[in-house]
Length: 537
Image (cartoon, rainbow, N blue to C red; front, top):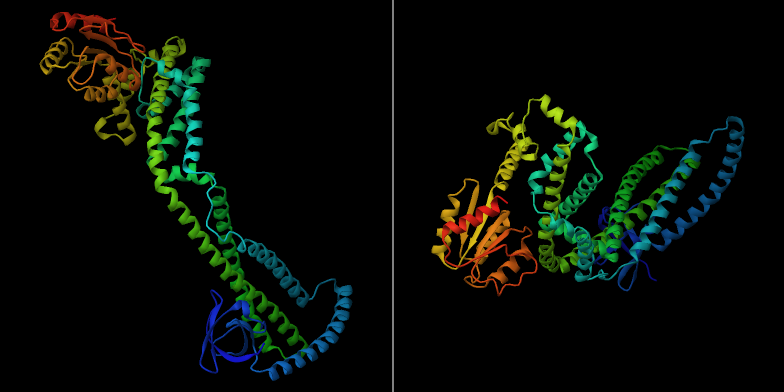
């Protein structure tokens, strides 16, 4: 290969790249990888000789001509010979000093330190180089969207199926409203008498905590789709995980290399100044060799940092492109699938809440310690959550309380509403619906009667309240009583008393019971008597 002369026009220490200017004013880009002169580093205006391979700079030397090179090599041979003699004399001297003082010389300490740095760097560079040679293509899919969602939802369905029995509980309490006071009450009662915690109470409370944690995680995925995408889809992608872990390791290595580069840069400048001040030829040669090692290590670091930065950018791009390819499709499918389980999970959780509250107070009423405790506080109330909460809130000013206390007031209002007897009336005639509603409502202040002619609107209302009685005609506006009740009981898990107006011969119930059948156009008096009969039952 023919060597050519040039000067350094530009050099960037951060990424190890620069530009040469030839004798013909041609500009050639180069990389620190081609640098073969460890005595010094690339600097602006430095004269060098270079070689081209396939029109690219492949090798750079810090001398202007072959004559300079030969002179330099002769000089180095002479220096090596002198250095060898000096080294032998020095070693003999050091052996003698070791025997006398048992202390290593400062020069020996420096050599060992440089050797240690070299060993550490070689290990790091080898590890990084191995990874640079991998994953040159885009990230492959390990499991498709359908497979990852099936795996997640199958586990969720199994957990919910284990708890299907809770749906038979004839009552619901909103856990999102009740949880703060429910666990406060639980802990307070247990502090008074730990014996009230039966095996059943212990089992229900533990399972309630499990389902509530399950639902919190589930709700988070619905509210923040990226969380679901990461937890369900991305964690199932083996190659994606590998690239991400490797990218994180590269970041750590770049930080380590940057730290070493800064330290070596300072050491390099310090060593140059030591050489400039040194007058002893032998010591100057020793310092020059040390500088050569530092320069070589420094060049390796700059080169590897550039390679790692390039790999980091490539991997970051691969990760982003992989996520963007599947993200939106996953969001849509997950939202659709999640809706099928969200209502079921909420109903089980609310049933567990109602059941725990019921059995806890039932057991508390049999505890003499708890009864004596409330008696000592001059609290003469029915022992249940609503009355206990009312007593607690009586000491607070609703207008001057914290957000936490306001939540308790909201919970109390919810309990008051739940104690009302809700009656749903559904007929094909608006006049009949309003007439029945008006007369039944006037029989009691504790009643909440709502009349409809729209089946859909009646279902929406029933999802918000625990309906105790349904009054409906056999033939409705858009469907019949059987189809309506089938839909009602497949979507709403409470089991109200049913009063049918009309002919029941065409109704064949499976999941519900027609408790009473009355003729159409029945007098309001008879209808009210039937309603009151079920309310007092």
